[in-house]
Length: 250
Image (cartoon, rainbow, N blue to C red):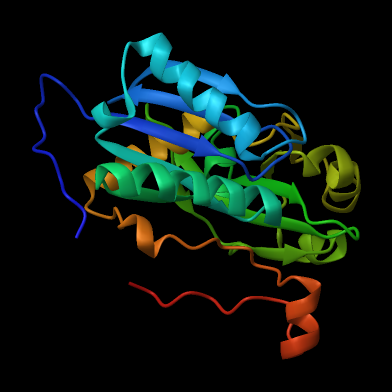
């Protein structure tokens, strides 16, 4: 069983966050709400040869060691199959060595947290290839920019399906904005705001991971699994199903 260190309000937990769902992997070190350091790995290279030096860099900048880390957070998807596997494997290796808990964070929720402030729903969009998009809607509010699930459940959608399901007013954010944002705005009207075409960041994964851990939702490293949403082609041929089954409600 993973060990939990006692929480000292005067010294918030030290959390290491890893984000590898997109083309630009990143690592962040946070103490409570304070971002101590953040580094990006090499673009399009989510492997350990890029990620582990970034982990070392943020620890050195903060004057810390892996043994000092109180908890971990990692994005579990959706996103790049290879990137997610590398990120999760890296965090598993680090967390196994320390026995600390891990927060499994949605890459779409991390994207939503980085959206510009608005009273309208936020729709996070990631490229799923073949003119399809990983998407989910959120209500983002409060000083901590905590995203709460909206009406559009996380899934894989075509632009036509998004036009049918999105509200007439919402803010789009993520790399999918550049690829399908104009079509969604044409189909739904000027209430569709085209936000930044960014990728998820480790700082947001860490912030959301800290909240999950505070709610008692951390998991042991051995229990970490990616949330791809779409199955790999070999799995599609084997099962006849394109999409993963939804996880059980806790």
